[in-house]
Length: 120
Image (cartoon, rainbow, N blue to C red; front, side, top):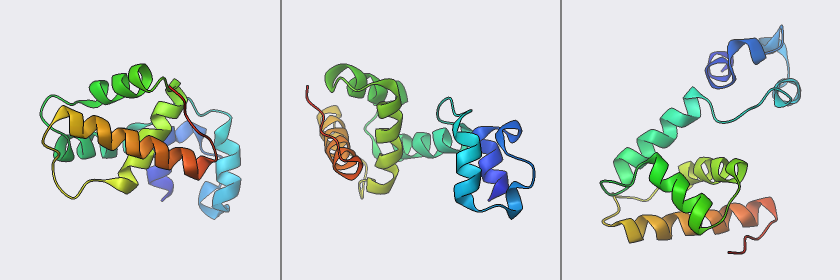
């Protein structure tokens, strides 16, 4: 697990003795240096988009939809993309409209779990 955390946040972000620390303590230590999604999460999101979204609906298309049409801030866009990993469709979506609908549903679900609502 420490290796995955190192891949995500960079080995320099992990505190000395991270393997022996409680996960909450490690999270507290690395939160100050967090600057965005890392390799591990970006790879998982890329696999989701490649396997479940229609052709042409790339990571940049998803981010553009979330930031432009849903007016989400960059950190919230990342959070919604991570949340989408837990809500993957059963099969590849057939159209860009279906992909947008999926991400709208994910945004609503994320908002409920975070206790916020998003207005256009």
